[in-house]
Length: 125
Image 1 (cartoon, rainbow, N blue to C red):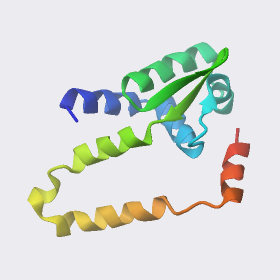
Image 2: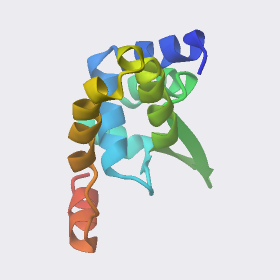
Image 3: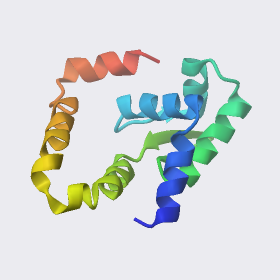
């Protein structure tokens, strides 16, 4: 990942509403959400939400998918992984034992989900 790409991604997340949007979209992977649903869930006017989604898309953090007349958005979790790897690329001068606790701490955030849990997340919107 190039520095400019990383800067765009960090800048996109450096605003409270956009950070909320991204976190909401992560909970709705892999289906994503329609732009109007995102705006309603976060109580943000649709035109303002469109601007936020455009910034997140320029940062490579969300992907827009046209479905008929509506547009759905998904978090690009692969891109987020690239951003995290960019941060950790030169981790601790090559001393993996220093970074190991951080890497271990990330594992519990992604346990296998049951079908019931996935359905609860979708009901949030």
